[in-house]
Length: 244
Ligand code: ADP
Ligand code: AMP
Image (cartoon, rainbow, N blue to C red):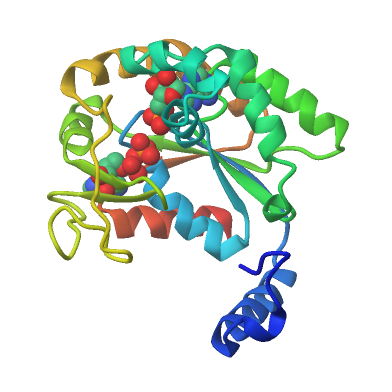
């Protein structure tokens, strides 16, 4: 994207054209505010870029934001690290603050995809308060329903490109060249918490603290249940059907 110091004349015509086409396409899209809920490895991060491009939304993944803060050793990252390493949830106040700030970005103008937030009923209530003040509400909650037994293979085979958030899997979505990002050729990494042992605590936190969030939104009649154990393309088809 152009920065303030960049002259429009310096931007290649193809980039200007594709940005113009994107904006024209986006202008006709309805606003959408979505939540993706599911256990670790259920496919939220894989489906998010597809939904984001289709509906011109921003993708806000609290896990990604927290990992960036940990890597940069910011005060937030220092506070969050210990819980994250153990597979436990960080405090509601920490994540509510980063979401409140992130939703103000211009890229969230037509709405957002919340991926990995809210993870407790307390977070959901705080989110409702924040949105209520702006006179808007959540349109749909996508419930990535999946059996725990499938998740260990998904989690231990996951490789990510940290700069872009692109996700690969050694068996289910391998990169063209093993260990390298398809787009930039940069090395892929495994997350520190993507081990069978830490997955157990993360699943425990999901069932105890996050499952009640699905009930919270079910009462509002806005939850759509997906068959997240299906192959990636079939899940994408289900998502598109639910959002059409
Ligand atoms: P989440 O964001 O919910 O934690 P991801 O989207 O990162 O989960 O998916 C976890 C791993 O499983 C990744 O390595 C991804 O490539 C792979 N994956 C995602 N969706 C599917 C699917 N439907 N079938 C098989 N593997 C999948
Ligand atoms: P994720 O990338 O969604 O798997 O999240 C990685 C880790 O970040 C989790 O195990 C938690 O420690 C922390 N985290 C992410 N989102 C939240 C949230 N909404 N509430 C509390 N902790 C979170």
